[in-house]
Image (cartoon, rainbow over all chains, first blue to last red; front, side, top):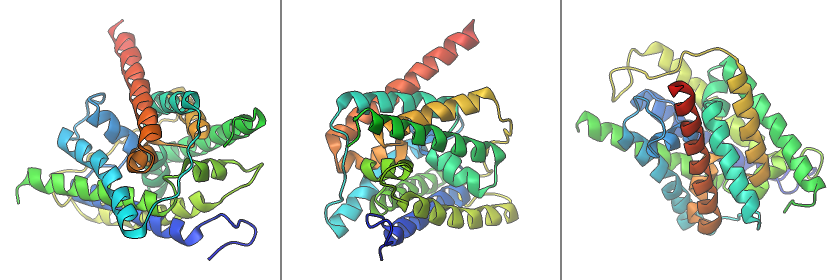
Length: 148
Length: 145
């Protein structure tokens, strides 16, 4: 199915993928009693977060991400992906995401999926905030002609 | 199966399904993610469908969570009870959004993309680690002083 106004959109694949992401977070919550927040898990796996999550949980969760993507690639064929050709944009983006997610205690998964579904005011405000600065940044990047 | 093994299995399974969901939904493609944020340009609403699907399932999980006393494999839920909306939250979310918009990547898709565009994803992941380490260093000295 395609949306006429947005021919590039993948609503069905997006929704099914979303259901899987929700299932993953539900398994982590009801199975191990923890939030499947990728930035928190990554910081824990990198030894930069001293919380009560066992190191093995954090490391296995992070390793699972590329393995899961690999399974889809294996079953469905190559995944279309377009990265910026600029190493500077990649590195600056990564650095800002690293600092920002630690300072703001979460990213798209922790605040966006787990927090919003719990109706946490903190997560709703965080998600609105990073969506707004994300929109401003993309608009700025395209204005400067750095888009891809 | 022992407690450690149960939790290890849950963590790996959760990560696998998460990575599969990201890859299937097109979220491992930074161009598609940035196109969602490009509301003044060639907008791609796919990310909204991803968030919708994920939030529906997770909302059900929270309803179940309220009705059970402990998780399947551990003794208690480890959930934050912080509810304050402070400059730290707003500042952090703002900086995260800038990086997200700049590279079209947040942490989950970056790790999933390690098997799709390994070099680019690795550059982003190392920079992500550097940013987290910089934050740890700054907060260490601020608490230390």
